[in-house]
Image 1 (cartoon, one colour):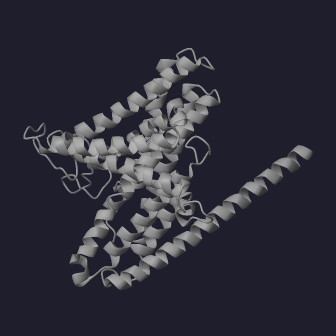
Image 2 (cartoon, rainbow, N blue to C red):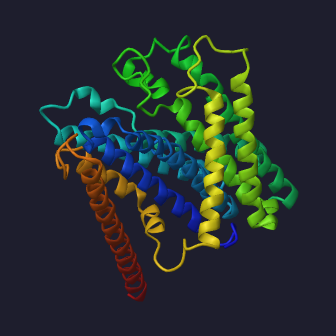
Image 3 (cartoon, rainbow, N blue to C red):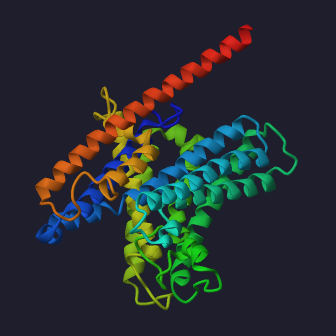
Length: 387
């Protein structure tokens, strides 16, 4: 499977499905393990696995955004049209994130605090990140071609792609670098907490909360994915084929070593250094790990069993939004299938298996109804043209 061939890259959907599974296990064990089971090494490793889904979802959103933007450019749309189309999708995701919070508050009416309506969750951050990426791409495309000429020459097109790539890397770096200040001495106190929480996750608790997903640092993963996506679509990457993914993984390993080296230095730029939550070095390490996961997914889907018949991960990856939305209520919500913090590892694992199979069935049903709806729409179109 060459990275430039299909419109939906199977290994991207596989990675999104992997993020769903890692999310399931983290949420299930966090919600259902009770007593001594919460203090075991098993629980610790489960929570460690839970550090991957959020950056992975954002990174993949950036890749998908780059693919969508490239397609719109090839269709001859102007910078304004491209920005409108891509940012609209980001606004839709953001609106769904707000709707999700309203739904959770309504279902939990009676014990959920009103402040939960303003909690910054991963859907909110994905939506905001997509709108920010839309604004960045609009700026680069508009400045690079103010006369809206189309098509551009191959050299001009390559120059434009390089500008998009460089700007995405720059924005990701800036977000990562300024995050420690925005969480500490540079906090925008002048903003109401409902807005400041989108900057640093302060919520209404007086200080930034590491369990939330504010723009800083989380949007940096989306811009890192955007940069990788533009690289993936480049002519050089198409010529390299599988070697491009291998080289990307090697670069990822290099980022990890560079980050560890920088972290070992005594010189610090920040008045408060929090490696695990705001450090640019930890951001680099996680980007390096994400690039390694891309190689694993690519190899599995090309040479392994990733596409040998039916793949549960690819299937869930294509419907990750509804899978995310629904499973939360059956794990943490009022309709939880198991009592909170009451299970052994075995009991919680059984619940996890039920959640996985249920979400897989939901994904299949969603895909079937979507295909059926598309068939009906096409049929109506043909009938309307016939009359």
